[in-house]
Length: 368
Ligand SMILES: Cc1ncc(COP(=O)(O)O)c(C=O)c1O
Image (cartoon, rainbow, N blue to C red; front, side):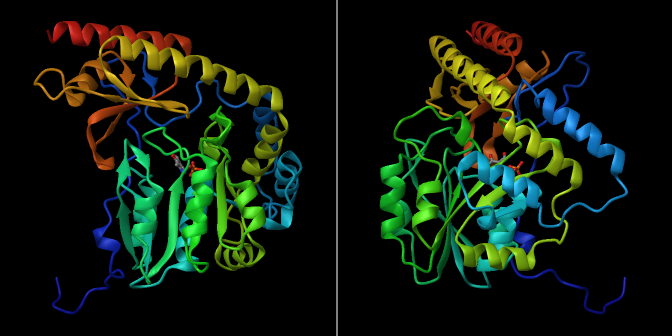
């Protein structure tokens, strides 16, 4: 090794703890149920799969770099101006673009204690500082976020509903948060799980984006649409924000098969409704049945539940994870989200849901 100075990443990069995706394997187990990444148990609809297959016949062509047909389809589905939509390679791409466009060294971006991990990662990658606002009852607290604002704050990331807690902030509270922020701070409403929410006091952010200059809403095709493998997300924002993101995004940041499948998925309202129904039914069932076993479950409005375990040896979240994994039931450890005593479980097929509840009952019995 030479003593010459080596290339150095920008400050902040080496402070990043790289994102660790949910496990997908249980060594030695034949049948595995992956419930660790909030994927839909129903998969994409037949129309999206067919559109993807057809697009596969033309892989030699560059995609439409502005994803116009997809933006038009999204605009039609939600009543939005396609010119104010930006598509990305998953909403991760858009969250990173927002950080790159709006943060510089020394700036601050706020997220909440158990907020989605991509926020601090995207922030640190720009040389800015992530600032953590405490939550209350595993729920984002508007007053705590507002109290964390300083003259250096540029972005506020709010996952609504949040992953991994499954809790949400009612629309009135989101409006109060927006009203309390300085006008130059951009509020990022990450509504990756919006389609699953069945609450009258919830709004994904569309209305706030439409009526203000400093709010954006991110959405994804990875969850209810079942297209996580294709990496497709979208953002609705004020024209100047859209303009900034379009200047720095990759010129072909969304691939052709993703565009084709995304258009078919957004138009397939029957599949969407089926996925929503499935989730509503099994989310309630899991919450109740796991609760009956004596484990605390954080009330969730999304497609997953956060299950809290005792701290006694033999009954911990880590013990439960090992027990379930040995049976092919893969949940998510959430220590990286400052929740070392909990596991997150995605709502699965009926079979998977019943197997987890039965296995948890056995686990707790064995640990008596
Ligand atoms: C809150 C939240 N935002 C964004 C994402 C990223 O989704 P995508 O697959 O669109 O990058 C996830 C995925 O887990 C999420 O939980």
